[in-house]
Image (cartoon, rainbow, N blue to C red):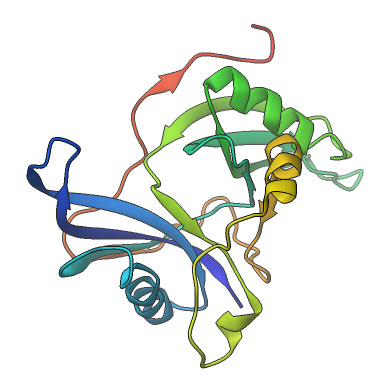
Length: 205
């Protein structure tokens, strides 16, 4: 069963002004276990990051679906809540789910999540939209279940880019069914937290 893992990587990065700085960056990827997540991040970043890098934290992350648009590279974490159906003698349970969507702003993220969840057959609320520090996402591929070389997300063609910028691509980790209260983490150095920047934007705004 594949799940989403946030892997925090520390390495020396060359900045735009030519100077070098030691940074820690989080990446999100699909993997079966913590060990697989660590192995995969070394494979994915081995040809991207120059020099040595170290994995300093791995966290199992609850993300229901990811909506990727080629025209934006900033990720927003969108939380939705809704009441689950219950029997007559039971009280409805409040369910929360987290989504990631690439967008240009909080308003853009709101519009895109509403469009992406248009077929959801329940009434839901969006209590929060925050900027996520995630740098890049490596989604599930069939190759993950085989002992062969893995590869990053393939670049879209010109035709695919136009369509995906409009509709977006959806990434899931098949087999994931994590309760909202689930919280498991392996801490190797320091922990990862989402950006504290939060917008008060709601459906009524």
